[in-house]
Length: 189
Image (cartoon, rainbow, N blue to C red; front, top):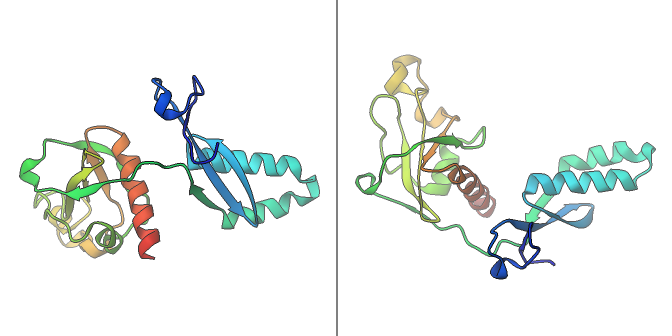
């Protein structure tokens, strides 16, 4: 069913299921369109290519490989919005490293998404930090030991930092933050 979420275990629609094991439907587009059911966009892409390659004759596999460069995956069954707000650091409990912002994300990209950092960091190991909540989950985004505060003249200027840590209280915050960044940059760009 398109635009519906089903449980992997009981196959009930999400609103009727108590298992909370959800399949999302993704639309994969590359010159042609197929709908596949998967738990993530990565799995949707894998299933798409697997079925496409099965359908193509061996001499056309090169065509499929070329098409892979222009793949676009759209989650068509997301029924919840991602709600993000920056918070005063005095209202936050402790967080710890959960993962990383996807590679290559610049300071300016993060400003486009979150606005100016709302914390200057600790003045020692970090130089810039965003603190907030995303879907009621506490998060921090910060550089760690890469800037001038920690490395002095050898450190990077904040505008040149591209390695950003995500802190939180659970691992789910990493996916939420990276999904939110993708959504916001797609809208901005």
